Length: 123
Image (cartoon, rainbow, N blue to C red; front, top):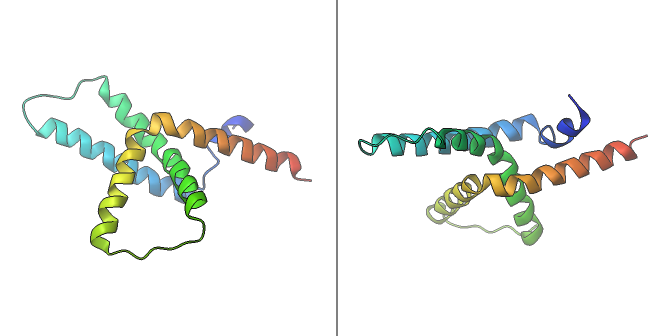
């Protein structure tokens, strides 16, 4: 794999990417079935690539979100009831999925520069 692709798309661990990809694919599938089963209308063919791209880029979008939240929150931990936390988590997942095409490039750029710098500093 060329170094630029290994540094960007290969920058996340396999386990992290797989876990987040499952959530992104589930959101894409949920939207697809909600639209196609909701009535007589079928989903436009042009929307299918968007669903696939969002599912593929969701892990990088979520990575950016988690990095920003980690920076803002630091090492603070909040204990909240599950009834509050689950809707908030679902909302952030949907936002990261919906905006994946716009947010993921920031994560990919960060991963590229981070891994390139680490490779250059390695003896």
